[in-house]
Length: 412
Image (tube, rainbow, N blue to C red; front, side, top):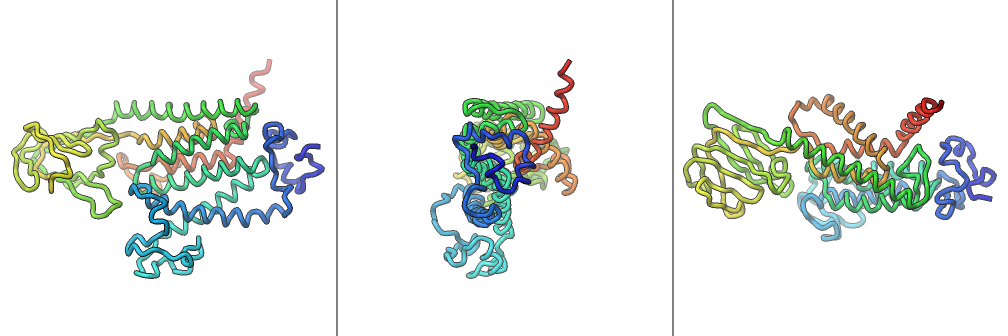
């Protein structure tokens, strides 16, 4: 008798809520990799306690990732967490997930500086998401649950990094892509939720198709957007002041300021080929005037009208008066391309299209609620993450309903 037989499975009402592909007797890959938590020696609800605690601990580590990775810091050194303001290490007895933030009332014990609610929120969010993943997928395979926990952890990290810094580290998305393809091989149903699955090779194939559709599809959108909207031209009737402003801390970027408008460095230079062109009546380098003409600014250097090139680290300041500027810009960052590819590696091409469509809806709603005007940058990564989570937590049923609704149309 199969481990998944109704006679041996407690809580039959849960089984009845499963879709047909979840209730098949063969389990995962013919039952060879199937593990059911309901056959473990405790009641099902008890397992949510260690899962919640595990999620909170992982969330605590994600806070380290969210803070350090954008700054180019190692997540291992220093080994102990520290206060962002006074830099004092946080002792182990004050570093318990969720509890410590509440106990200290959101303040550092040493300098009493406020500790952002984000730290508590990330731990709680990760713990809740871990529990939902366990609830929905542990009945299929515990190894697959572990892969989906990795996905959840990556999506949480990417969401907060992109929201704060407008970047998505490729190290996170490439690692997630590998895990996603492995999960598809472990459970071939994952990339075709709502459809019929095959063997492990079929699952891997669908995962690769999902990655291709996500990565290549959105890359084409980015390239077409670059051709159509890749430059922002500014012209002024009278010369206006422009300058470069150094960041005030390790988190903020350098700024290009022209006519009072500040533009972050990472919003200008997304590619190695990007160039900021300034037509200036006067250019001052390190306080000395070098005359006017065409100034070319690249990510790490400036080229003066006479052709000389100065590395940014070698000059103290750059400012002057300009009559026009051509600023490079992107319709969408390459980080979003890698992220959608990772989502496709987990959920196939159907998950890609749903995540992209729903992310667009979420972004529009956020822009309306936040009253974000046209032309203002809005990080898209968090909305792609929301779309992927929505698909994973049940939106695939919409696709299943759609396919079933179309089935009668194909019959004679």
